[in-house]
Image 1 (spheres, one colour):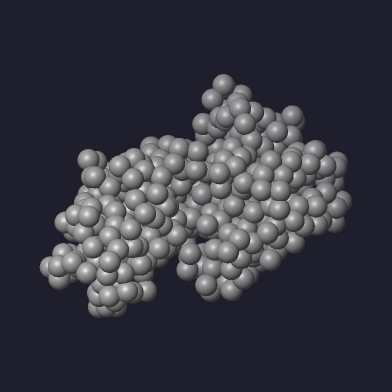
Image 2 (image 1 turned 30 degrees about the vertical axis):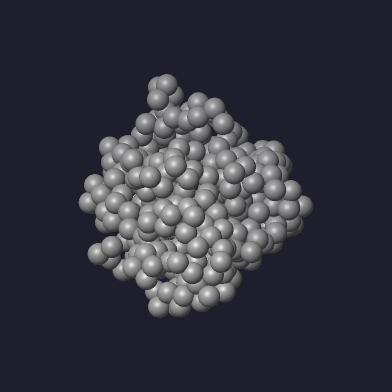
Length: 431
């Protein structure tokens, strides 16, 4: 009789990590019954909006040690996971299912269709192929380790309690419900005996209320160096000026690396921006001196020797006190020096942040020393697994958070499948 029992996996969360875990556990362990519980009305919502609707699937960084450095929290844990399932594995998995990825100049990888729907459709096909049971509007309120709980007449290891009063039995549970913005939302996980690192936002933009530069909304600089004063935090990359302040990949990476310190300071800090990275103040001063000779008869506003966006160039000229009709030959040394400072060491006071609602990422989650990186299984509760952002792992922007979703989802699937196959073997031999 026991040999015919179908083991049951419940995956909590219908995002990238949860669906990837579900379909691969079903594939790797034939006969395993898999149910996904999603509290919302839509699966894979972050996949849908990622990368402006293109889905930044992963990043073309194939060196595991280098890849691990892209995770401000959890890098060593991720490093161990990546030896089991890395970037090349992700690319291969999607390719085997007809989804080819392309690499952009900055290393980000997207489907060649430039549509997140391609990724969603691929995952949904796998859901259907392996008969994964998807239940929407199914919010979990508690998971109780309960040997002997009866579900359909079969003893199960967990009782999963839903907000609507239903209770489901499961042999294995994978928690992949994403990050929570508030500490109290982790309480049902704490009741399982796990500790939680307090959550704070990881990816956010820098707000500068009332700063004149916000009038340049929409201007993007392909490469600038942004640093936080009083720290060693510094990032170089594209910077976008918005109506609330500074954004873009360089700012988002900086926000991830400084997430906890910036939260502790109430999101009040000063940043410096070098709009001409790679050039020292002395080099910029020399370039401007050369322009005085080469462009002597031209107006300073019309001679932009650095290729900056014209409106940004004019903004810093005004800040340095350069008149609209001033020629390069007449540029005073004092004004030139001030312009050098603004171009290389522009300072801004940050007061607050703005997070991306759909792409919200948190620093914090289940403590990693309580989870086995070789299986993503709990060290405290047998049969309990974790995947994705619910763990205290978060990456900088650029496809790293999705890569961890695929990696941890697969590692958990392999751990669950190994447990399920071992249980099946035991049941057969015991008969």
